[in-house]
Length: 113
Image (cartoon, rainbow, N blue to C red):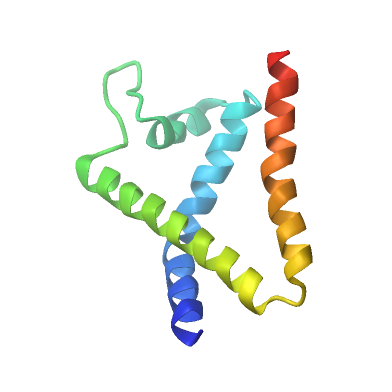
C-alpha cells in the first residue's frame, strides 16, 4: 500500500509540470488558439518543425517525453488500483470508471453517425 502510494506520488510530482504543459498545449491546439509563441511551443507537443526548419524538440526531450508517457500510464493505473482498493466505495469507483470510458466513447460514436 505505502509503496503504491509513494510510487504514485513521486512519479506524479516529477512529471506533473510536463503533463500540464502537454494538456494545455493540446487544449489550445484543439481550440485553434495558437497565436505566436503558443504556436512555437506547440512544436514540442506535435514534433513539427517551424517554417524555418528549426524545432524545439530533440532526442533527449523525446526520451524524457517517452518516459513521462510510460510514467503517466503507470501512475494512472496505480491511481485506479488505489481508488478501487482503498477508496470509500468500490461501486462509486467502478461507476466513475465506466463513465470515464462510456461518455467519451458515446461522444465519438455520435460524431461518426
